[in-house]
Image (cartoon, rainbow, N blue to C red):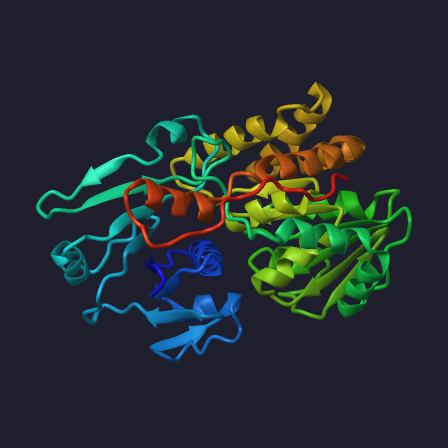
Length: 395
């Protein structure tokens, strides 16, 4: 019998929560765990997993049991590993059932990703339950060996390298989107973001660029702003616009795996939130991060923390323009000047992105989580293969 795991996910906004939980479920299942994923919003989940039946209370998708998590929670036998994603509150009856087990589950709260220094000191800390014989542990994703690492499928970077290095595979991919292969001097950019008042400024500087630019926009919250620049109301998948040297193509909202291919194929990627930010780093291409905004402005600290960590090893000029563009994009002004300086440093930024991806690859969140279980005295009868150093190509 395999080691089993319950993951609880409450969808707060957009697709970040369920996006991370769905990837974690697939990662743990690939390592041999029996995974049950509890989700309170199957409609949002269905955008990332098209084969999901959003009307079904209980089903299996890709060898993972998916349960609707409703306010009328039916009693369930707790798994050996219980993951509470992003401090969502477990059903009270489930917590009582956890405490009643002869060997209570290992209870983990998976936190949000941050590059801030304080994360290392909080990763793995215990939090005893005030009344029950249970202890919850905080598990922080992050960018250093003293954190929980990042979600990464074992074969992802090898598949990425094959995709990026084969001209015919790339040509077939562009054809699948209804596009020809890029011209030698053309720049292809993916644009996925929240609403952003600076997008018109960005599109204007791209349209006046001496370099031909094709911008791929997956349908989402930024699309109406893009459409407005071209005099349209909303925009929809399949539409396209041309102005000056800029061509824009609108893509359908794509599931996670197909989004990876888009990031791999483009020269520069604009991404948003947590999950897309991590995937952009695995794409090994220069990227611009739009962080999820918080009313108290703490998101800007997280933005600057990742920019500082990511920029280590860059020349002062390249590090400066990277930070300027990230900050301008999140401040929603000053993007035109920042883009011009960023584009001038793109070759160095591309080399750095490839090195950064390779540097991060040895810190796998799912494997670190399983190692955490083993160190806590669980998974005695369960074995998994330790992570081997990544042997992929360096571009």
